[in-house]
Image 1 (cartoon, rainbow, N blue to C red):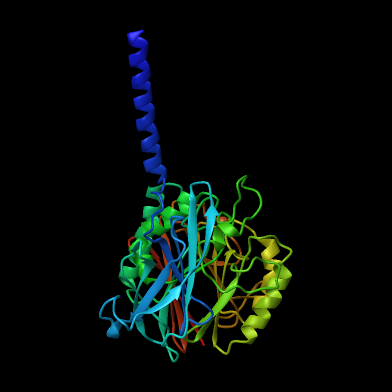
Image 2 (cartoon, protein in one colour; image 1 turned 45 degrees about the vertical axis):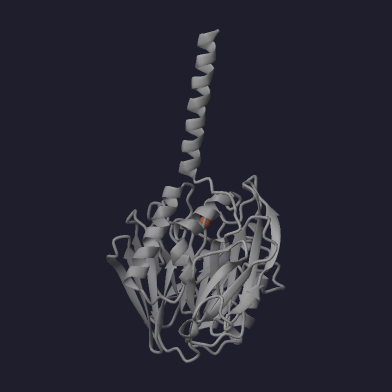
Length: 412
Ligand SMILES: [Fe+2]
Protein backbone atom coordinates (compact mmCIF):
# COMPACT_ATOMS: atom_id res chain seq x y z
CA UNK A 1 0.00 0.00 0.00
CA UNK A 2 2.84 2.27 1.05
CA UNK A 3 4.61 1.47 -2.23
CA UNK A 4 1.54 2.32 -4.36
CA UNK A 5 1.19 5.63 -2.53
CA UNK A 6 4.86 6.44 -3.11
CA UNK A 7 4.60 5.54 -6.80
CA UNK A 8 1.52 7.75 -7.19
CA UNK A 9 3.26 10.69 -5.51
CA UNK A 10 6.36 10.25 -7.71
CA UNK A 11 4.09 9.99 -10.78
CA UNK A 12 2.31 13.22 -9.89
CA UNK A 13 5.60 15.04 -9.28
CA UNK A 14 7.02 13.84 -12.64
CA UNK A 15 3.83 14.93 -14.44
CA UNK A 16 3.97 18.36 -12.78
CA UNK A 17 7.61 18.80 -13.87
CA UNK A 18 6.73 17.70 -17.42
CA UNK A 19 3.79 20.09 -17.60
CA UNK A 20 5.83 23.03 -16.34
CA UNK A 21 8.63 22.22 -18.79
CA UNK A 22 6.10 22.06 -21.61
CA UNK A 23 4.56 25.34 -20.50
CA UNK A 24 8.00 26.91 -20.44
CA UNK A 25 8.93 25.66 -23.93
CA UNK A 26 5.61 26.60 -25.58
CA UNK A 27 5.70 29.87 -23.71
CA UNK A 28 2.49 29.81 -21.71
CA UNK A 29 2.11 33.52 -21.15
CA UNK A 30 2.18 34.96 -17.69
CA UNK A 31 -1.20 36.08 -16.40
CA UNK A 32 -2.53 39.47 -17.39
CA UNK A 33 -2.03 42.22 -14.83
CA UNK A 34 -2.87 45.89 -14.57
CA UNK A 35 0.47 46.69 -16.24
CA UNK A 36 -0.02 46.92 -20.02
CA UNK A 37 1.48 44.11 -22.11
CA UNK A 38 1.87 43.42 -25.83
CA UNK A 39 2.11 47.12 -26.67
CA UNK A 40 2.07 47.60 -30.43
CA UNK A 41 2.18 50.97 -32.13
CA UNK A 42 0.90 51.47 -35.65
CA UNK A 43 0.16 54.34 -37.99
CA UNK A 44 -3.22 55.89 -38.34
CA UNK A 45 -4.19 57.51 -41.61
CA UNK A 46 -1.47 60.12 -41.31
CA UNK A 47 1.95 59.26 -39.79
CA UNK A 48 2.85 62.99 -39.68
CA UNK A 49 0.15 63.83 -37.13
CA UNK A 50 -1.07 60.62 -35.50
CA UNK A 51 -0.09 57.35 -33.85
CA UNK A 52 -2.18 54.38 -32.74
CA UNK A 53 -1.62 51.89 -29.93
CA UNK A 54 -2.99 48.51 -28.86
CA UNK A 55 -2.25 46.71 -25.58
CA UNK A 56 -3.64 44.14 -23.11
CA UNK A 57 -4.32 44.14 -19.40
CA UNK A 58 -6.25 42.08 -16.88
CA UNK A 59 -10.03 42.46 -16.95
CA UNK A 60 -9.88 44.56 -13.78
CA UNK A 61 -8.61 47.51 -15.82
CA UNK A 62 -11.62 49.25 -17.34
CA UNK A 63 -9.84 52.46 -18.24
CA UNK A 64 -6.34 52.75 -19.65
CA UNK A 65 -4.56 55.80 -21.01
CA UNK A 66 -1.62 56.80 -23.21
CA UNK A 67 0.24 59.69 -21.59
CA UNK A 68 2.55 61.56 -23.96
CA UNK A 69 4.61 64.68 -24.37
CA UNK A 70 7.08 66.22 -26.84
CA UNK A 71 10.46 64.76 -25.84
CA UNK A 72 12.24 68.13 -25.62
CA UNK A 73 9.57 69.45 -23.27
CA UNK A 74 9.28 66.36 -21.07
CA UNK A 75 9.93 66.87 -17.36
CA UNK A 76 7.92 64.01 -15.87
CA UNK A 77 4.56 62.29 -16.31
CA UNK A 78 3.19 64.18 -13.29
CA UNK A 79 3.68 67.55 -14.99
CA UNK A 80 0.95 69.71 -16.47
CA UNK A 81 2.20 69.51 -20.08
CA UNK A 82 1.35 65.79 -20.38
CA UNK A 83 -1.42 64.98 -22.88
CA UNK A 84 -3.67 61.97 -22.40
CA UNK A 85 -5.56 59.71 -24.83
CA UNK A 86 -8.05 57.36 -23.23
CA UNK A 87 -8.38 53.96 -24.88
CA UNK A 88 -11.45 52.28 -26.27
CA UNK A 89 -11.43 49.10 -24.19
CA UNK A 90 -13.24 45.78 -24.54
CA UNK A 91 -13.06 42.37 -22.94
CA UNK A 92 -12.18 39.23 -24.90
CA UNK A 93 -12.22 35.59 -23.89
CA UNK A 94 -9.64 33.50 -25.70
CA UNK A 95 -8.05 30.06 -25.38
CA UNK A 96 -5.77 31.29 -22.59
CA UNK A 97 -7.63 33.80 -20.47
CA UNK A 98 -10.03 36.68 -20.32
CA UNK A 99 -8.35 39.99 -20.92
CA UNK A 100 -9.00 43.58 -21.83
CA UNK A 101 -7.91 44.87 -25.21
CA UNK A 102 -7.24 48.59 -25.30
CA UNK A 103 -6.89 50.75 -28.40
CA UNK A 104 -6.02 54.42 -28.46
CA UNK A 105 -5.31 56.98 -31.14
CA UNK A 106 -3.15 60.05 -30.66
CA UNK A 107 -4.16 62.89 -32.97
CA UNK A 108 -3.02 66.40 -33.83
CA UNK A 109 0.64 65.65 -33.13
CA UNK A 110 3.41 67.88 -34.46
CA UNK A 111 5.09 66.50 -37.56
CA UNK A 112 8.74 65.46 -37.49
CA UNK A 113 8.73 65.51 -33.69
CA UNK A 114 9.92 63.03 -31.08
CA UNK A 115 7.53 62.17 -28.28
CA UNK A 116 7.85 60.19 -25.07
CA UNK A 117 4.94 58.12 -23.79
CA UNK A 118 3.83 55.57 -21.28
CA UNK A 119 0.63 53.55 -21.04
CA UNK A 120 -1.45 52.49 -18.05
CA UNK A 121 -3.48 53.96 -15.24
CA UNK A 122 -3.40 54.05 -11.47
CA UNK A 123 -2.93 50.24 -11.40
CA UNK A 124 0.48 50.59 -13.05
CA UNK A 125 2.28 51.83 -16.14
CA UNK A 126 4.56 50.32 -18.75
CA UNK A 127 8.07 51.65 -19.14
CA UNK A 128 8.63 54.88 -21.02
CA UNK A 129 8.69 54.58 -24.82
CA UNK A 130 9.42 57.00 -27.63
CA UNK A 131 8.07 57.62 -31.11
CA UNK A 132 8.70 60.13 -33.85
CA UNK A 133 6.10 61.48 -36.21
CA UNK A 134 7.00 61.65 -39.91
CA UNK A 135 8.28 64.95 -41.26
CA UNK A 136 5.88 66.51 -43.77
CA UNK A 137 8.76 67.32 -46.16
CA UNK A 138 10.76 64.10 -45.70
CA UNK A 139 12.98 63.43 -48.70
CA UNK A 140 14.62 60.13 -47.77
CA UNK A 141 14.04 57.37 -45.24
CA UNK A 142 14.53 53.66 -44.64
CA UNK A 143 12.05 51.05 -43.51
CA UNK A 144 12.52 47.36 -42.99
CA UNK A 145 10.50 44.36 -44.07
CA UNK A 146 10.40 41.08 -42.15
CA UNK A 147 7.97 38.29 -42.90
CA UNK A 148 6.62 34.98 -41.63
CA UNK A 149 7.92 35.12 -38.07
CA UNK A 150 5.40 32.41 -37.28
CA UNK A 151 6.53 30.16 -34.46
CA UNK A 152 5.20 28.05 -31.64
CA UNK A 153 7.76 28.23 -28.84
CA UNK A 154 9.49 31.06 -27.06
CA UNK A 155 12.69 29.90 -28.79
CA UNK A 156 11.05 30.30 -32.21
CA UNK A 157 10.24 33.92 -31.47
CA UNK A 158 13.82 34.56 -30.28
CA UNK A 159 14.72 34.22 -33.98
CA UNK A 160 12.36 37.05 -34.86
CA UNK A 161 13.86 39.25 -32.14
CA UNK A 162 17.33 38.44 -33.43
CA UNK A 163 16.62 39.37 -37.05
CA UNK A 164 14.81 42.54 -35.96
CA UNK A 165 17.78 43.50 -33.78
CA UNK A 166 20.14 42.89 -36.70
CA UNK A 167 18.05 45.22 -38.85
CA UNK A 168 17.97 47.90 -36.16
CA UNK A 169 21.72 47.54 -35.62
CA UNK A 170 22.39 48.14 -39.32
CA UNK A 171 19.64 50.74 -39.76
CA UNK A 172 19.19 52.44 -36.38
CA UNK A 173 17.14 55.21 -37.97
CA UNK A 174 14.65 52.88 -39.62
CA UNK A 175 11.24 54.52 -39.51
CA UNK A 176 8.98 51.47 -39.33
CA UNK A 177 8.65 47.77 -39.97
CA UNK A 178 6.43 46.28 -42.65
CA UNK A 179 5.58 42.75 -41.54
CA UNK A 180 4.23 40.80 -44.51
CA UNK A 181 2.18 38.35 -42.50
CA UNK A 182 2.11 35.01 -40.75
CA UNK A 183 3.16 36.87 -37.68
CA UNK A 184 2.18 33.77 -35.67
CA UNK A 185 1.76 30.11 -36.58
CA UNK A 186 -1.79 29.81 -35.29
CA UNK A 187 -3.70 33.03 -34.81
CA UNK A 188 -6.11 31.28 -32.47
CA UNK A 189 -3.32 30.56 -29.96
CA UNK A 190 -3.06 33.61 -27.76
CA UNK A 191 0.31 32.63 -26.30
CA UNK A 192 1.86 32.90 -29.79
CA UNK A 193 0.76 36.53 -30.11
CA UNK A 194 2.03 37.14 -26.58
CA UNK A 195 5.36 35.50 -27.45
CA UNK A 196 5.70 37.57 -30.62
CA UNK A 197 5.15 40.80 -28.70
CA UNK A 198 7.19 39.93 -25.61
CA UNK A 199 10.21 38.66 -27.61
CA UNK A 200 10.71 42.14 -29.06
CA UNK A 201 9.02 44.10 -26.28
CA UNK A 202 11.55 46.91 -25.97
CA UNK A 203 12.04 47.23 -29.74
CA UNK A 204 8.28 47.46 -30.37
CA UNK A 205 7.88 50.20 -27.78
CA UNK A 206 9.83 52.46 -30.12
CA UNK A 207 9.16 51.05 -33.60
CA UNK A 208 5.84 51.26 -35.44
CA UNK A 209 4.63 48.25 -37.40
CA UNK A 210 2.63 48.15 -40.60
CA UNK A 211 1.31 44.58 -40.36
CA UNK A 212 -0.13 42.49 -43.17
CA UNK A 213 -2.59 39.71 -42.42
CA UNK A 214 -1.30 36.19 -43.19
CA UNK A 215 -3.24 32.94 -43.51
CA UNK A 216 -1.89 31.63 -40.19
CA UNK A 217 -2.81 34.85 -38.38
CA UNK A 218 -6.52 34.40 -39.00
CA UNK A 219 -6.93 30.67 -38.39
CA UNK A 220 -9.90 29.81 -36.26
CA UNK A 221 -10.26 27.01 -33.71
CA UNK A 222 -10.49 24.16 -36.21
CA UNK A 223 -7.89 25.72 -38.54
CA UNK A 224 -10.41 26.17 -41.36
CA UNK A 225 -12.10 29.51 -41.82
CA UNK A 226 -10.50 32.86 -41.42
CA UNK A 227 -11.11 34.66 -38.18
CA UNK A 228 -9.99 38.24 -38.76
CA UNK A 229 -10.55 39.12 -35.11
CA UNK A 230 -7.40 37.20 -34.21
CA UNK A 231 -5.57 39.87 -36.21
CA UNK A 232 -7.68 42.95 -35.58
CA UNK A 233 -7.57 42.53 -31.78
CA UNK A 234 -3.79 42.97 -31.96
CA UNK A 235 -3.44 46.05 -34.16
CA UNK A 236 -5.12 49.43 -34.22
CA UNK A 237 -5.29 50.13 -37.96
CA UNK A 238 -7.37 52.45 -40.14
CA UNK A 239 -10.78 50.88 -40.68
CA UNK A 240 -11.25 51.08 -44.45
CA UNK A 241 -14.69 49.84 -45.50
CA UNK A 242 -16.80 48.53 -48.35
CA UNK A 243 -14.67 45.89 -49.99
CA UNK A 244 -16.07 42.85 -48.20
CA UNK A 245 -12.70 42.29 -46.53
CA UNK A 246 -12.82 42.89 -42.75
CA UNK A 247 -12.16 46.47 -41.61
CA UNK A 248 -8.70 46.82 -40.08
CA UNK A 249 -7.09 44.26 -42.41
CA UNK A 250 -6.40 46.49 -45.43
CA UNK A 251 -5.30 50.13 -45.27
CA UNK A 252 -2.76 52.59 -46.57
CA UNK A 253 -0.57 55.47 -45.49
CA UNK A 254 1.83 58.02 -46.91
CA UNK A 255 5.34 58.17 -45.54
CA UNK A 256 7.68 60.81 -46.98
CA UNK A 257 7.51 60.52 -50.75
CA UNK A 258 5.95 57.02 -50.68
CA UNK A 259 2.44 55.66 -50.59
CA UNK A 260 2.13 52.20 -49.05
CA UNK A 261 -1.02 50.11 -49.38
CA UNK A 262 -1.54 46.93 -47.36
CA UNK A 263 -3.92 44.36 -48.84
CA UNK A 264 -5.63 41.30 -47.38
CA UNK A 265 -5.21 38.05 -49.33
CA UNK A 266 -6.64 35.85 -46.56
CA UNK A 267 -10.34 36.46 -45.91
CA UNK A 268 -11.88 34.77 -48.95
CA UNK A 269 -11.47 35.55 -52.64
CA UNK A 270 -14.87 37.21 -53.18
CA UNK A 271 -13.47 40.55 -52.04
CA UNK A 272 -10.46 40.50 -54.41
CA UNK A 273 -12.21 42.53 -57.08
CA UNK A 274 -13.46 45.16 -54.66
CA UNK A 275 -10.08 45.35 -52.93
CA UNK A 276 -8.56 45.98 -56.36
CA UNK A 277 -11.10 48.78 -56.90
CA UNK A 278 -10.26 50.14 -53.46
CA UNK A 279 -6.57 50.18 -54.42
CA UNK A 280 -7.35 52.17 -57.57
CA UNK A 281 -9.21 54.83 -55.58
CA UNK A 282 -6.65 54.76 -52.79
CA UNK A 283 -3.66 55.30 -55.09
CA UNK A 284 -5.53 57.99 -57.02
CA UNK A 285 -5.87 60.01 -53.80
CA UNK A 286 -2.10 60.06 -53.28
CA UNK A 287 0.34 62.30 -55.14
CA UNK A 288 3.40 60.43 -53.88
CA UNK A 289 5.80 59.39 -56.64
CA UNK A 290 6.68 56.01 -55.09
CA UNK A 291 4.03 53.32 -54.76
CA UNK A 292 4.42 50.16 -52.70
CA UNK A 293 1.94 47.35 -52.02
CA UNK A 294 2.43 44.88 -49.16
CA UNK A 295 0.50 41.61 -49.04
CA UNK A 296 0.94 38.05 -47.83
CA UNK A 297 0.20 35.56 -50.65
CA UNK A 298 2.08 37.19 -53.47
CA UNK A 299 1.38 36.81 -57.17
CA UNK A 300 5.07 36.16 -57.88
CA UNK A 301 6.64 34.05 -55.15
CA UNK A 302 8.47 30.75 -55.49
CA UNK A 303 6.96 27.96 -53.41
CA UNK A 304 3.40 28.73 -54.47
CA UNK A 305 2.02 29.58 -57.87
CA UNK A 306 -0.65 31.97 -56.65
CA UNK A 307 -2.79 32.34 -59.73
CA UNK A 308 -5.92 33.77 -58.06
CA UNK A 309 -4.11 36.83 -56.71
CA UNK A 310 -2.12 37.18 -59.93
CA UNK A 311 -5.26 37.26 -62.02
CA UNK A 312 -7.12 39.61 -59.72
CA UNK A 313 -4.48 42.19 -58.84
CA UNK A 314 -1.53 42.18 -61.24
CA UNK A 315 -3.56 44.09 -63.90
CA UNK A 316 -4.34 46.67 -61.21
CA UNK A 317 -0.70 46.93 -60.12
CA UNK A 318 0.31 47.33 -63.80
CA UNK A 319 -2.32 50.01 -64.37
CA UNK A 320 -1.26 51.94 -61.25
CA UNK A 321 2.49 51.64 -61.86
CA UNK A 322 3.26 50.04 -58.50
CA UNK A 323 7.04 50.12 -58.02
CA UNK A 324 7.44 47.35 -55.47
CA UNK A 325 5.26 44.57 -54.07
CA UNK A 326 6.42 43.13 -50.75
CA UNK A 327 5.16 39.59 -50.30
CA UNK A 328 5.35 36.81 -47.69
CA UNK A 329 4.13 33.22 -47.40
CA UNK A 330 6.74 31.48 -49.55
CA UNK A 331 9.53 31.12 -46.94
CA UNK A 332 12.37 31.68 -49.40
CA UNK A 333 14.03 34.72 -50.90
CA UNK A 334 12.64 35.92 -54.22
CA UNK A 335 13.29 38.98 -56.33
CA UNK A 336 11.41 39.10 -59.58
CA UNK A 337 12.52 40.81 -62.75
CA UNK A 338 10.64 44.06 -63.35
CA UNK A 339 7.31 42.73 -64.67
CA UNK A 340 4.42 44.13 -66.63
CA UNK A 341 1.52 42.01 -67.89
CA UNK A 342 3.49 39.00 -66.70
CA UNK A 343 6.40 39.75 -69.03
CA UNK A 344 9.91 40.85 -68.16
CA UNK A 345 10.41 44.54 -68.94
CA UNK A 346 13.27 47.03 -68.66
CA UNK A 347 14.23 48.32 -65.17
CA UNK A 348 11.89 51.11 -64.10
CA UNK A 349 9.17 50.04 -66.55
CA UNK A 350 7.49 47.40 -64.38
CA UNK A 351 6.85 46.18 -60.84
CA UNK A 352 9.40 44.26 -58.78
CA UNK A 353 7.96 41.54 -56.53
CA UNK A 354 9.96 40.35 -53.53
CA UNK A 355 9.76 37.82 -50.71
CA UNK A 356 12.21 38.36 -47.84
CA UNK A 357 12.46 34.66 -47.00
CA UNK A 358 11.40 34.13 -43.38
CA UNK A 359 11.94 35.92 -40.08
CA UNK A 360 11.05 32.75 -38.21
CA UNK A 361 12.03 29.09 -38.19
CA UNK A 362 10.32 27.72 -41.31
CA UNK A 363 12.19 27.57 -44.63
CA UNK A 364 10.91 25.97 -47.83
CA UNK A 365 13.07 24.64 -50.68
CA UNK A 366 13.73 27.14 -53.44
CA UNK A 367 11.62 26.57 -56.51
CA UNK A 368 12.76 28.13 -59.72
CA UNK A 369 10.13 30.25 -61.48
CA UNK A 370 10.41 32.03 -64.80
CA UNK A 371 9.87 35.44 -63.19
CA UNK A 372 12.75 35.14 -60.71
CA UNK A 373 15.82 37.24 -61.26
CA UNK A 374 17.17 36.08 -57.87
CA UNK A 375 16.07 33.12 -55.75
CA UNK A 376 17.85 32.09 -52.56
CA UNK A 377 17.31 29.66 -49.74
CA UNK A 378 19.95 30.36 -47.11
CA UNK A 379 18.01 28.60 -44.34
CA UNK A 380 18.49 31.56 -42.08
CA UNK A 381 16.27 34.54 -41.26
CA UNK A 382 16.46 37.52 -43.57
CA UNK A 383 15.22 41.09 -43.76
CA UNK A 384 14.88 43.72 -46.46
CA UNK A 385 15.92 47.33 -45.95
CA UNK A 386 14.12 49.70 -48.30
CA UNK A 387 15.66 53.17 -48.63
CA UNK A 388 13.63 55.67 -50.60
CA UNK A 389 14.81 59.03 -51.89
CA UNK A 390 13.40 61.33 -54.57
CA UNK A 391 15.39 59.69 -57.34
CA UNK A 392 15.78 56.06 -56.32
CA UNK A 393 14.59 53.21 -54.17
CA UNK A 394 17.32 50.86 -52.94
CA UNK A 395 16.28 47.47 -51.60
CA UNK A 396 18.99 45.51 -49.79
CA UNK A 397 18.47 41.98 -48.49
CA UNK A 398 20.46 40.82 -45.44
CA UNK A 399 20.79 37.53 -43.64
CA UNK A 400 20.85 36.96 -39.87
CA UNK A 401 24.56 37.77 -39.72
CA UNK A 402 23.88 41.09 -41.40
CA UNK A 403 25.65 39.99 -44.57
CA UNK A 404 24.29 41.63 -47.73
CA UNK A 405 22.84 38.91 -49.97
CA UNK A 406 21.11 40.89 -52.70
CA UNK A 407 20.56 44.47 -53.76
CA UNK A 408 18.44 46.21 -56.34
CA UNK A 409 17.94 49.87 -57.18
CA UNK A 410 14.85 51.25 -58.86
CA UNK A 411 15.39 54.65 -60.48
CA UNK A 412 12.72 57.32 -60.94
FE1 LIG B 1 1.42 32.04 -45.19
